[in-house]
Length: 480
Image 1 (spheres, helix red, strand yellow):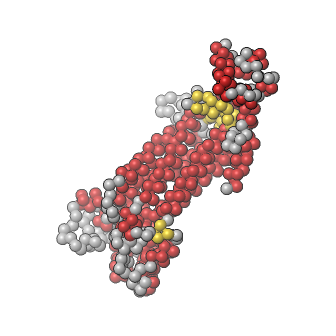
Image 2: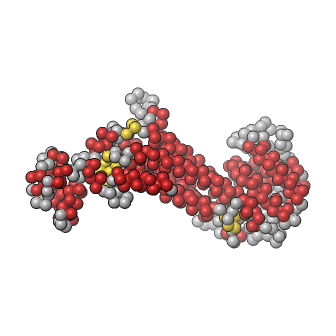
Image 3: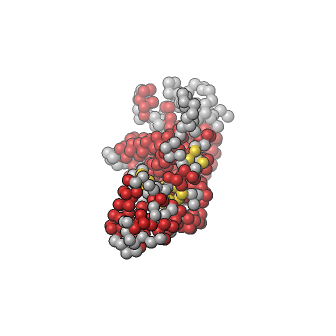
């Protein structure tokens, strides 16, 4: 059956289409009995959140079903009334998901839109659903339920990207490349070791999202508008039905708290920063100046003017969109900074910040997971770039092992590098005599150690790039 609107009949529209705010309501707004005049259309459009908060409809219905069952358990409504309410809400969920629900901006938000439709469908029992409940604790519940589900999806995407990077790292444990400081070639590492740095970053991201999920999983319903209710409700029952381990302990805080939103946005902003850093490195590696990697055609774009170009637009957009997620965090903090307790309509801004961060971060995670296994690395170019003077520190540490204080060893290696550069030679060209001009402690075995592979293999401490160390690390990672 097509749902009946309070307005003139409207064509079916999917949930993503705009809401018609121009037509006047034919039935009174559920919460306007105290007023003699209807709001101006411009004010109605400005204050309504229905255009974006209807995204919460499944979770609003989930919370309302749990609330109705609790009301019946507390004998505040009959079991028959609760059954009608639950059945009606499930019908409404299907209507919205199938695009058959007529949204009206006069409803203000998704909570009133659903309640209005429920009243249309089942009549008087629907008017009892809001017993012992305010939109203040209702929206706090909806947002927590929604974010609990979405954070779990974000964690799954992070796990997928980490799995992809770990698999790639296993293939490149012995692929030599230069490590950088100040974007200058510093010391040789392996590609696996470089990828593992991002595995660690993403691991911390996962931990932060898990912590945000824990702080989100607090049940606020029962706080009412700000001071709870005198009615004999059972908050623990609602918490159990909705899967919450904890109940908000202070009714003022329950409706005013958006720390859990900031926790999520903070984790999202830092995860986006990590993806941005990752993108920037791939962009650099793909330039002709580096030549470490070739971008896949299926993840690249061309130039409208220059036919030879293969542009890293995907990576640039991931890098650019990071600013949006950081902006969402800053906007939420700014919204909260001056709010007195308890609820204020400023908090209506929380949902758009959450939705935008999710809609930006999640596709970025998916895109990077698709990109990494399609990159083609040029092992020879990377190996050649790891040569030059990247082994100067190894020479200094060689002398330290033979008793020379590090500062003197550093000075000897530095003067050796200066002389070699001046002679337009490379470390690999040096003879034992050349080395001994700078320190008599150099022995013939030093020549065998002057290779990137040997340097990496010697760095076998935990956290280092040695192949054996990296294999142990990846094994431990796989067992978690």
